[in-house]
Structure formats: structure tokens, C-alpha cells
Amino acid sequence: MMYLGDFKQGTTHRFFWGTNDSDGGSVSRTTKGAIYVIKDGDVDGKVTTGLTDTEDVAGGLHKCTLDLSDDFYEAGCDYSVVLLGAVIDSQTVNSPLAEFSVENRYAGSELFEKAARVLVNKAVQNKVTCAIEYYDDEGQTVILTHTPEDTESQITRTPS
Image (cartoon, rainbow, N blue to C red):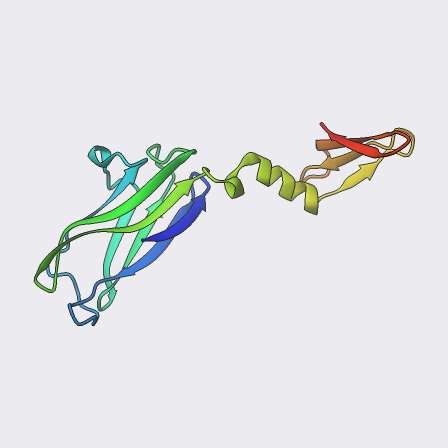
């Protein structure tokens, strides 16, 4: 099963998946079945909310679109996309297709976004106090201040 990534709530994402016959060739689904999204492993709570299944964009290649703007998609949760009840090459198929999360990994966290802004935006150091202020995207709001403390053996920077 493929891991799609950790997404921001309210965004839209697409992925492709394929169906094959017993020899490995691409084939269409004889019976479409249904594709569901499962939150945090709760199979009883499977939904089709925010999910669009486009069958056969090219023989045996299918596209799923995930619209994460619905209230079902909560920050801090993991999701699985599964296929249930399809018939492919005369066989009934139930299969996991993909996994993703919504703001549930370090890369999607508020701390990570703040660190990224610190790296690419304005920073100003006060010559008297030596404090370094890091600014948000608009260049006006301070999002982090480093205040160095100079002792005989080391300089310590304390973020605040």
C-alpha cells in the first residue's frame, strides 16, 4: 500500500492505482465495487466523504481524488483508502489502496511551519541586547526571539 503523505486540512490530492489480470496485464474492473476512507483504523466508520473515484482514466488505471475540506478529515488523524467488493478478472477483490494523514506528522506541524518561516524571512539583531528577532512572512510580526547569554566559557541562545 502506498503512503501518500501528511496533508494540510482543507486541501485536495489525487493518486492513481491500477487493476491487473492474473497474468499482470492491465484490465478494467468488471464490477466497480466501492472505495472508502477509514479514519484511524475504524472500519465500522468507513465513508466515501470527500472521495471521488474515476474509473479507467486509461484501461485499468484509475484516479482517486481526496477533498480534505470536509469535517470528517481532522488534523491529527491517519486515514486508509480501501477498495471493497470489486470484481477484477473474475475475482472478488478487497484491497487497501493508500494511506495518508492530516497534519499528523512533523512536516505538517505548526512548529515545522514556524521553523521554515524563520529560515526564509527577515531576522534583525539588536546591537545592545544582542537579541535576534525573526519575523513572519509580512516582515512585521516577531515569531521567535533568540537571546544570547554570554558567560566566560560559552554563549547560550535561548529561544522564546
